[in-house]
Structures are given as C-alpha cells and as structure tokens.
Length: 97
Image 1: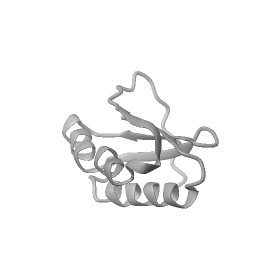
Image 2: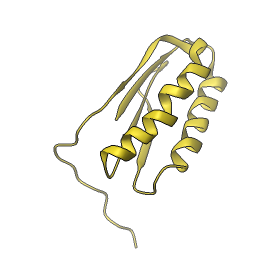
Image 3: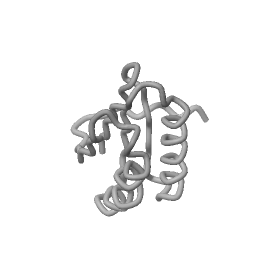
Image 4: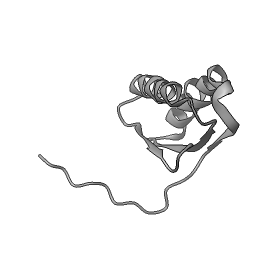
C-alpha cells in the first residue's frame, strides 16, 4: 500500500503526532507487516506498507491511515490517497545478525 499526504504548512507538531499514531496502529498488526513513513518535500509525505497477504493489507486499511485521516482531516491541503500496490521486484536488506 502506498499512501500520499499533502499537509497544510504550519502544523508540523500535529503531523508528527499523525505519524506517531499511525505507527502505533501498525504495531498492532501482524509482525509480517512492514511500514515506512517518509517526507518527500516541505509538506508532502508518504507511507508505504508491505504485507504477507491480502487479508493483512485490508486489516491495516480498515484500522490505519484512512481512519486516522478522518481525525486529522483539518491538516490536509488535499485529501490523502491510499493505493493498493503490488511489488513486482524487490531486494530485502541483508540480515545484520
């Protein structure tokens, strides 16, 4: 899943809370769920999540970003997008252990 967020400038603390709450939601998901949040520009952010299966992806969509975005709706310059994506190639990081 790829989510994109365009925030109204001047709400940096609330944006930080938005992503911190998102991480808490993700931490309640199966351990096989991977999640990354990134800043793409001054007010543009993205979140990317990977899942072991479709049920796990649907579970996060039902509890995560789309739901949390309603609470923080006043922060968005445009409505966020949540796109289901399928990985066609990847390289996992090497184990450090």
